[in-house]
Image 1 (cartoon, rainbow, N blue to C red):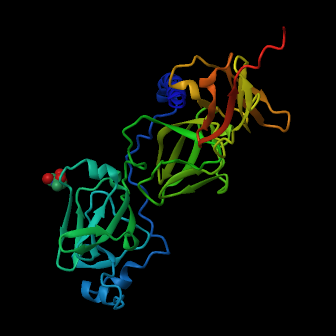
Image 2 (cartoon, protein in one colour):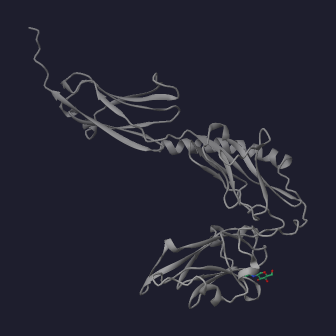
Length: 392
Ligand SMILES: *[C@@H]1O[C@H](CO)[C@@H](O)[C@H](O)[C@H]1NC(C)=O
């Protein structure tokens, strides 16, 4: 489809630009800080999290008894982290496990299913194991690294005989950070990532840090400046990265994140942001025939026009009565500024039929399409026999 091609073409153009940039960038800016010093002693977990000392002294039974299931909820779900020496801790929204250590989660339910960061799901290197016990499922991840950072979700299953399905409403998730003294960003296999910026469509730059304590800033490669993050136009979330809430053309370009923690300062993978004029809505075409009724031999002209946002490409396709028998019709397409208002344009397709015949009688349908969708409109045309020549 032409719409797809458009992006392919842009993608290629950008690609060659990047390859050139990449060489320069590598030597000039991309030198990762080679320091191998350990970050400053770990800070305390966020204050919102339950204090480790508070709920960890009880065994699993005591911990789960606390939120005793209401009689209606058969499988009350609870996610706990198993700490050293058999201590348990109910997890909050996030937890941190020093990379290299073991992550062990228990989720109450029988049975339960787990979802883990996609990188772990794809790469089965034996570090991840899940076991179903009588009353809970256990997930264990060993030899952890910063790359394991991400969302871990437990789904209790609802079963009828052997037929089980996930109970999405009861899913419990936790975001696990694996602070890594050498890698502040979750490693990416790509040197750069191409991201489309669509008009008014939130865009995420997924520079994921391995530690919740890392300070992350956003930077533009050229000109080399730090991008202001005001929390409204652009915001940062330690579990997601940066979000550009309402992309505008000036957001486009090469951006990257910088994380610093202690003496360590590192750059993320690069994000090539390409701005795409993305329409707010599907087009609203208007169709009009030069006349609803023509005599055979006259010329017919059917116009289909769309008034929409500037620089938004609209594609037209036609269906018409003579199509099946291969009537050779032709179309003329044009784009003109709309006199009515700023930043609007009129796109038009005109279908021309020279010397109409009986077979041209019927319904003419025009479909207008943009990136948001398509809409069709129709009109009918009647062909009447040629009027008797008036001339003698
Ligand atoms: C974890 O690391 C140790 C030490 O490098 C290694 O012997 C062991 O096989 C690893 N375990 C898994 C499951 O990869």
